[in-house]
Image (cartoon, rainbow, N blue to C red):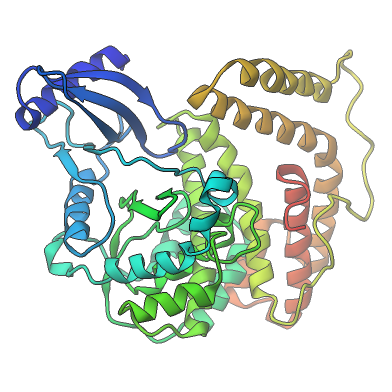
Length: 455
């Protein structure tokens, strides 16, 4: 849809709320947002007064995903004292924008995690962000569930298992996590409203701290500790060593949460939810990539996310290694055993890798240097994808041969067979060998997808 058409739809949707004659200016799509679009604009009335607003909507052509429920959640959260934007319009079947849309006030502040963690002007606010997260989460968990009819629920571990089985992509590291989570599950707690995606990246932060909590699309009924564990998942630290979203310590988070009226936090239960959250992020990565591969939404960002699954596998293996790492050091891509000859030299120069390098240099030096916003963001992702493909062409044949040898040593022929053996307990007697093979496999994948990850 052209921006002009969207501007007309926005004007029509806002007229009943802001008055006739309202028109839209400065409509700009925000970068990021793999599953939903975000647009920022100014709505100006006939007397000239302007109001900065944000449109969130499902990509055109996709089924509505619950933004009406999200609007109800935002209003209930506001009543509970959670900092959230004011909701202006919630799309429904009769609205100009359709059901998969939500318009709310624009709140000034920073949302990009790396800037939140590094910008000098936010340094004083960073000292208190972990504790603020605890207080905000306590407020979220005070929302009465009866105010939000229709919130989904269910067993998150069983739900993840169902998604993985439907995807049909075997991941032995995931199976190790499923086994551990099933064997070490903490007692069930009272069900409450869970945000579902509370993390660095879904917060608007200013010099005074957290100004708003965004992206309520995954909210559901569940254990409140799920939100705290999700915030501690390594993916949301963005290179920081601080365990709570890169913002602070677990003690800061938990102390503030409990002081603000949150449930008592058991450290073992919190660790369980962190591991479940890590596994969940890996599954989400696969789901998002399948969205691209199935042509529901074609996106270089969604395609690239598939190569982040091995990061999650590496994180899971570290969390599950109670007695310390099974292999020292970070993945370097080196393999052992018989290795085939290098790539074929049938084709003329430049080689496939050199061609990819040239495209990557073009994206980095020309496209990124002369664009901004969403196009620059996706150009950087595309350059990373080019680099991944080049490393796979270089390392892939040797890695495949070594991986096949490791599987044979366990008496299986594929990752699918290994995943089934872990799930059934068939290889429990060789658990250390299984861990070593899975770790070597994930290290090889990381050497292609993200060399140097983990140190």
